[in-house]
Length: 477
Image (cartoon, rainbow, N blue to C red; front, top):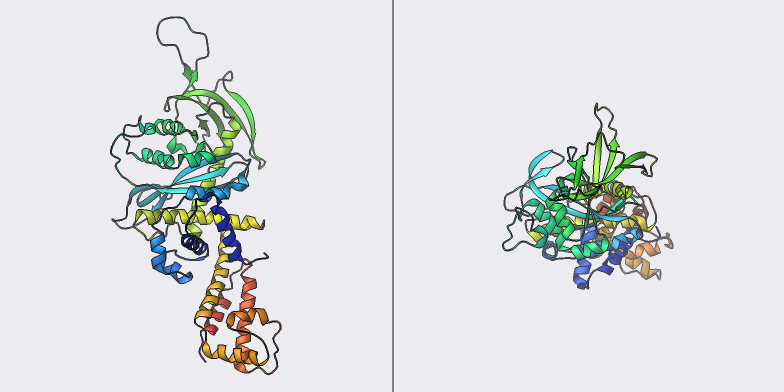
């Protein structure tokens, strides 16, 4: 890397603001500082930790976390590498542990890790997936809140029995940024939980196409394509039940599928009637071989767009799992579950900032075309952040006796120096003759700083040397 990591990361953050409306300069500096802290702080991420590692106080973080922000517009700036690729929107719920009773939205939600309903919070993550590049970019996270909407329900909820249900809340979350999301893609990919009539109808009314997976006991029927009888009554629309273990070869056609990793499969596709959705869909049947099981299941994927190819349906649904990696990295590296706030606005800002930091880390790794994971980027930024923090504190609270002695010694030899930061510039050209023990210590400090600057650009984390240098700087002679 030719530049310092913090300077590179700052440029990446600023470049993504091209798709966002004009914002205040104070909020811009706050956003850049907060984003760097989310990537660089190694442990729990809260207001106290950010005030320790950053240049702002807790009050500034608490005030700005309550402000709104266009997350979809900002995160869309990270999708430039997906141009001319097959992209779609992926949605998924994620459970967040939360204790207490007074946080807005706290309740019992399903946790996949525990396979049970647990007490906490839930968010709906919306991301864009790239079927060609096999990656995902976070767009927006919306917290699930159990609120009752009074008045007439919107059109996309008109067919629901309960317009305040959980499924209705997910549709409202998509409707909030419908226009901005449709600029990214008009395809929504979701897991089998969303393969319900109410959600499929609502997504279609919002202008999206749904790609999902059916349950193993799904009810499908063949479409009647024969001539009409001419008799009185409603014309015949279906022609028998679809048995997944015995498909009709005159209706289903076979296609060969290659996933790009050397694995091949045979797809069985046709347009049939889905009983649960009460609509015609394009289905794709795939034999999923699971070793160790006596009976092998045939998975059925579908799309509400009957003209979509079977290959696109498989590619989109396989890539949907990339959103799980986003949530995993958010939990492990950027403090997704470290929410010590109770206000709705602060919670929303924290969830989106945590997942957006993953976008920043991946964009930072792509900048120099290096194979860096989120953990590697976090280590790199953490080392650079610690060096920056030590330099700032050394300039504000230096050891006055060390500084006066060294400045006087350099001025007698005609070298212009004002503070400790200037050591990095003159270290290689320093005249070592006539140094006292005190001056030698100051030169050693400069050597440590220069060495740690080089180490901060690598994947390693020189913990021992950082603390040794910090201890020496704060020592009073």
